[in-house]
Length: 253
Image 1 (cartoon, rainbow, N blue to C red):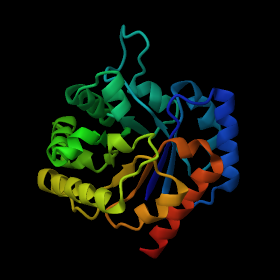
Image 2 (image 1 turned 90 degrees about the vertical axis):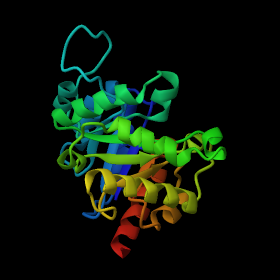
Image 3 (image 1 turned 180 degrees about the vertical axis):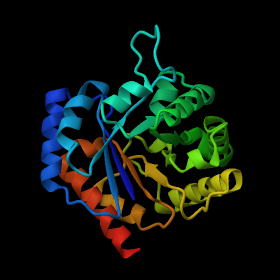
Image 4 (image 1 turned 120 degrees about the vertical axis):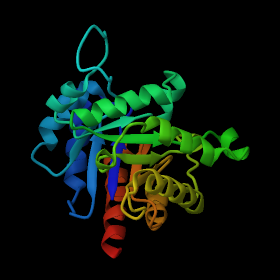
């Protein structure tokens, strides 16, 4: 189980330190799950100083694909590694929607992250219109194949896929367990076909209005291997509950 808390554009460095400290007071480590915090760039160093001696890992919310150069405002993979990041979230629907990120650009970021020892969390998902017109599976297949182009089978061991239906992000309306399981199964099948990975071992997590009141049901599906948590991760108690549900289900399985 992988539980990632995506803070998005919330929390200053000092606020992030307090949030992390409050969460760690509630967090109980379990070897069957991995917890990752993804603060904004400005809080990465401060949060890393707190979690560096704990099992909690750090993720960035984005990265640029060049190692260095005249790219004002961008952050490179080596910079993230130096800050203690293990993971980086790529292709989030908000990046696709507001910053016009294409599958080709996301692919360049994925390959750059892998080349520098960062584990990508690649987000895929459909809009409500695309779901209602039956385009969910073809769209996600395209996002997967184009976003992971030229990624080897060995490199795929470091990649996590996050299914995040766009219509469920920040809306309070999560996908049902049945809806999520169906898409997760299709994603795992695609990975198995393309890269030869066992569909029961490749990691596909769910993102989209994950809260304590629906997390346990989602995690009960054997095809859902964790969560990319948005708003609920900004409340230490809510995030700790989600983590504990994941640990409980993992123990049971």
